[in-house]
Image (cartoon, rainbow, N blue to C red; front, side, top):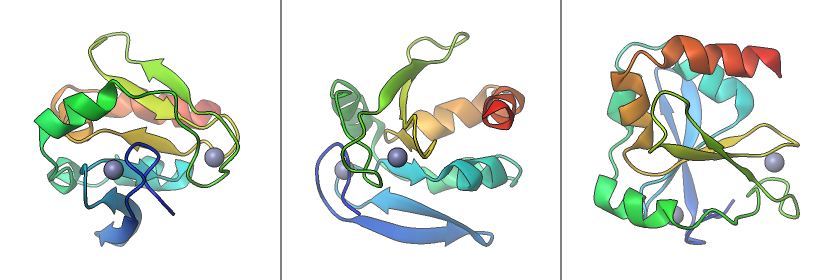
Length: 123
Ligand SMILES: [Zn+2]
Ligand SMILES: [Zn+2]
């Protein structure tokens, strides 16, 4: 799979047995729907967000992207209500989610965990 933002290879990594993909170029994180759900349960999961937030902020400008998995499906930008500066992209078909570098950490720092869990539970 290629990064939906910069087209660089996404590398499969895992943290406490939960797999996710990280772009080695822009530092963005890709989670399949179930992976994100599992990861929010893991303590210190914010540590996986090792990318440069400055690079993430740049990549955040680019939101007209296609799902790296479904390829021809356009991802939808989603804003967090409490933290509108955070914009994620989610795929309406496979429910995978892309976090730009720094965004996942930002989420974890606020008590967003429960809300993101609700989100995925609804789908
Ligand atoms: Zn990238
Ligand atoms: Zn998809």
